[in-house]
Length: 454
Ligand code: FAD
Image 1: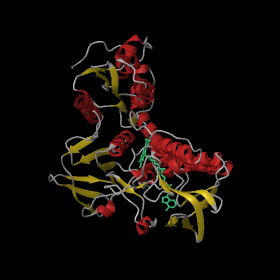
Image 2 (image 1 turned 180 degrees about the vertical axis):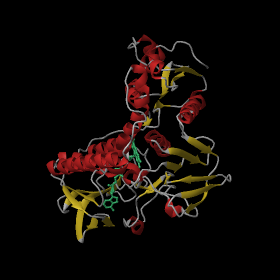
Image 3 (image 1 turned 120 degrees about the vertical axis):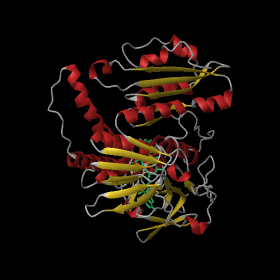
Image 4 (image 1 turned 90 degrees about the vertical axis):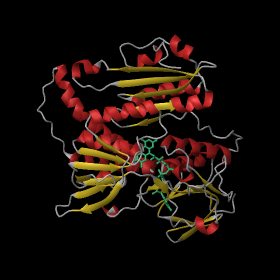
């Protein structure tokens, strides 16, 4: 590998790129990385991190109201200052950007601030410099995509929404994926009159159906206005800067901000790969084999740009797998994408791992479904009518738990532990033999004895 300037040149210092650069450098490889926007990529700057901070902020709203039943007396209504949240978030992200920079520096990775372009199988151009590398890793992530409709220029995307100058008192999000559902909850919690518009009959396609329906009911109870089976026909900016949104069902809504959360596309523009005729998947993402090699074997790719599940821990796992295969010469089986747990930070949260009831029934035929739908103990005094749903799906043939789902407070925190059990192929008998922790909601996961349905 010594004929090249570097052993590895990484394009994109996001979740996957930084982890790949650091782990490859730790094997002794000479590594450089280019980043043209922000260290840490989507997750740190305009994704997971700011979103979770805003979700915490939104949860305080109901916590203040609920605290009265526990004896707390606070001025009501509590006032929310958007600028404080936004600016504190900006400072926290600057701190994280610094940490990423120091991690790369400490790993002896050369960081180049600029947009990189692939010239050929071993050469990259960035800020006027041509750099050669034995391997080039494309970890450029995705970019928000908005469908066409008259007035689309008035729509924000998820890159813009965190840093709004003023707080939108009336907020509309277009889309039915997890990001749309999260933002509808967040702005509702922060005090906006919040609307979600989705063309399908129910949001969160691919998730367990009962979980989707339960979430819809809980979000409606909290005041999110859900508009299904309709779409945006047009948007008009009015003289007071508000937006008049006309829906395809004839309804009109007046809002102060419109967020399009309608999916992301691979961030390949201007990268030069089109000139190399690199192979793409039908959805436009980069096609890679189980070693993360594209159709040009010295050009590797991972993370969102490959169409893998668009999650930070997936990009991180792929990066570590890639390093072990390419720089530690390990012979590894294909990375396992089964049983990846995930959370949706709507209010209340969703946590999920494994198969939905529908997918399990299609795969195994005979299944047992256990559910617990209850009012959490906290809400006996809080006055909230929020409910919690927990659900286990069991393959009847061998008693294995193949899916675990929850809608309720901190569902992501709880399902992470259950995910280990599901991945380890533990049985319902193992769950039943586990002594619960009392008093918690989580103990329901080990005390559901009678199937709700088979
Ligand atoms: P990215 O993190 O997107 O990094 C790509 C980097 O490459 C960027 O920094 C970009 O500026 C840079 N780049 C692109 N082109 C070039 C070029 N030509 N030259 C130099 N640099 C370039 N995931 C979760 O697991 N949990 C969550 O809660 C979650 N919430 C999310 C919320 C939102 C609103 C969004 C948008 C995403 C969320 N995600 C979440 C998804 C997660 O952010 C991504 O899956 C993850 O960031 C993918 O990592 P990546 O390395 O593939 O790409």
